[in-house]
Each structure stands twice: as structure tokens, then as C-alpha cells.
Image 1: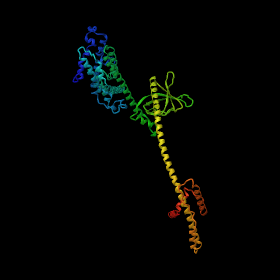
Image 2: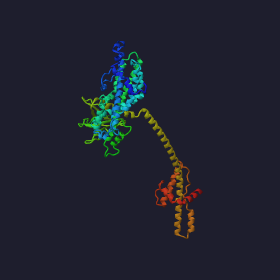
Image 3: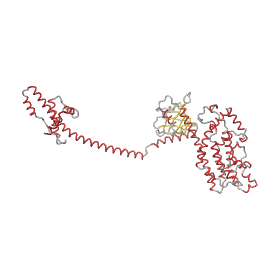
Image 4: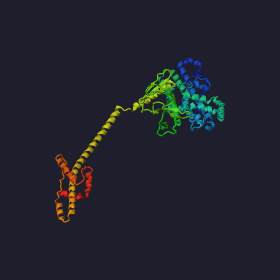
Length: 566
């Protein structure tokens, strides 16, 4: 189809779709016997046999080209009649919207008409292809539709459409309340009433249009199934149509997934905003949870109302107290929040033996259904706890979701367990570290042995020197004593000093087994000399001898020379 033709002109060119109830009606009922029933049904499905007012398209979108034409026209009405001329109104002036924290900094027009321009662009592209195929032949038959649909719904287009419809589905859930609040605003209510008087709108309300948008692709999937059933003797066409149908199905599922992500993202912000952290130490569980909620990697996977019944530890009896809590499961943990009375805030629930925050991968436990009749309950028993905790939810679907979440969460503990390969690797690493440490130890021991061997050698030399010094000092002191007794006998005293026998023992070689007895004898001789002439009765080889060396330090050089002469 020529891109220079506007979408409005294209709608006018396909106005024949409204003039005839079906493809057979266009060809003439008299020609019915020329075609097989399946052939007629296929072309009717592609054509359209709608004879209902436009605002009932929600219930009767069963054909392809005409429904896409009407869908694009409806999007244009929403864009041109509602969105573009929408009055600029301060959100705070609309009663009921000033407290809508989900609006944030978004203006009211964007909040009420999300993604409308993008939706018009995307569906105009689809409508151009379908209308072009329908206008190629005078009989308006499309023999090969599937190949064009496969090209239309490629991966890039599906991703873009999923984002658009997911965003719209998220906004649509709140549009009803917001529209109701807008109708209570005099200026906006007058604007809505003026649009309804426009002949083009056919008195359609925004609520009607938005319900059609929400269910658009579900109707397309149903229509493709009908076309496939009525396509015979063309395997390639059937295969392409089936690919397109699966693509539409994945589009619906992706949109719902994106809707859930938007909802959970908003709920995550709400939990973080309403969590009570006043007067709480920064290292507390509440602060840890707040940091996790505000983390860019935080992802909410489920939440819902639970009734917790802790079991009495040690006796297995169930507590009579039931606590209403909000169970919250993130990708990283599970926790329960309890509303603070007379407040709009939450606090962590600590009424069970479970930790306030159950971090996946750090705790292991078991999920078991309670088996109670007419009750959707389940038990949680942690491996480190001594008592069960009974939880009750509202529906069997909620029970199934919690079962999946807890089993997947506890399975992360198994994923963090040491495997044989990791243990073997750690063992090899530890063994290598021990071997290196043993080498270093042996090296230090060898060094210490060498130092000790040298120390024993020098110790014998020091012992020899000390013996010489001691005897030399004693001889000098004896000389001074003799001088004080008689000055006249100084010459004799000098000769006596020279005749004093100093017990000098030659320094031994490196210590060995053969000279141990000589060393012991030397030590005894030295100690006897000290005991006889001084108050020193004991000589510690590590302390007192060092002090003795300091005492006679001034004689070291002289005595060492003297020893060398011997």
C-alpha cells in the first residue's frame, strides 16, 4: 500500500467492508454453490460479517480486516477527540487524584491516555498491509495471508507491542477510578460531554474504548484459529498462520508478564515507602530490608495476605493466636510485614521461630501442605528451627504460587552447597598451601638450627672470656687489698699480681659430644670461683651472664688480646 495515502483515506477506500455483511454477500448469494463451505468461511473470516454498532466491537471482534479497520478508527477517535484537546488541569485540583502516589510526576493527560500515539502507529502499519492485500483483487480474496503476517509479527514488532500493551494494561487498571474522579471535576466533565456530542465518536465512552484495546489480541488469536480451520490443501499457508497465531499468543503472555512487573515494581516502592524504620538502629533487620527494597536489583515475585499460626516449641501444639500478615517474596528473600495499628505503615513480623528475613541460599527448609479440609494452608519448617509455622492463604492458586516460590527458594540452598568438584578443588588448594607452609617451616627450623649451632660455638667463647675476666678482676682486687695493708711492700705486691694464676681455659672448637664433659667441668670451676669470691650463687646463661658481660665490657678488648696470646 502506498505510504503517501493517509490512514483516513485508507479507511474510506475500504468502506465497502461496511456495505456488505460478508464476502459471500459481496460476491452475491447466487454464487454460493460455486465454492466449498470452508472456502466461504475462510474469506468471510478475513472479510467480516459484522452488522453491529461500533461500540459493541468489544463483543464481536471476530473478523480480521474489518475489525482492524474499526480498531484503528477507534484509536484515532481516542487520540484526536479525547487526548489532544484534553484540558490542562492541575492534578491537585481533582478530588481523589491528589493522593494518587502512583501518578508521580506524570501529568493527568499522559496518565489517562498512555501509549495512544504509539498504538496508533503500530496498528496503522498492520492495517496498511491487510488493506493493501484486500484491495489487490476485485474479488477481495487474499490467497496467501500467513506469509505477510509472519513478516508483520517479527521479533522486534512483538517486543514493541508487548511493551505497549503491558504498559497500557497497567494504566488501564487505574483509569476507571481516575476517570470517575475526573467526572467530578466540572471542567473535565463538561469536556467529556462535549466529545460525546461529536458525531464521529458515536457516543462511545473512554471506558468502552479501553476495554476493546485490552482484549484486542485475544480476539485476533481466536480469529486466526478459525482461519486455520478453514484453510485446506495448503500446508505452507497453514504453517505460516500457525506461526502467526503462536506469535500472537506469546504477545499476550509477554504483555501480561510486563503488566505483572509494572505492578510488582509499584508494590515494591510502596513497601519501601511504608516500612517503619523510625528509631531503628542502622544495622537492624529493618534497615537491611529497606536497603534491599531500594536496591536496583530487587525484584518482587509474589505477595499476598497470609495468616500465620506459629507452633509451640517442644510440644508440637498449634498456637491459638493467628496473625494477619502480608507475605512478601523477593528474588533474594522472603519476609512478612504486619500493619502497625492506627498507622499506614508496616513493621517486620517476628511472631514465629523463622528469622525476620528468610534469605534464600542461607536457610534450608521444607514446604508441606497442611491437608486440612476446606483450607488452603501449608507448613514451613526450617532446618535450624525447632517448631513448625502454619500459614493459610485464600485460594488454591495462591497456595500453588507459594509452593513454587518456597521450593525454588530452598533449592537455592542446594545450589550453594559444595559439590564434589568444588570440594576437590578446595582440597587441592589447601594441600598446596599446607605443602608451601611446611617448606617455609622446614626452612625456618634449618635456620634456627644453624643459629643455635653458631650460638653454642660463640657461647663457649663467651664462657671462656668470662672466666678469664672473672679471674682477672679477682686478681686485681686482691692486689688492691694488699696495697692497703702495706705500702711498703708494693714491689712484692706487684710480683704477687704477676704470679697470680689465672685459670684460663683455651676456647673450644665447635661443640660436640666429645668435649661436653670438659665444658661441664669448666662451668663448675667458674661457678665455684664466683661463689667463693662474690655473692653470685647462680648464673643464668640467658640473663645474668649478659649483665656480667656489660659489667666487664671495658676489659673485653684487653682480655681478648690476652686470650689470643695464650
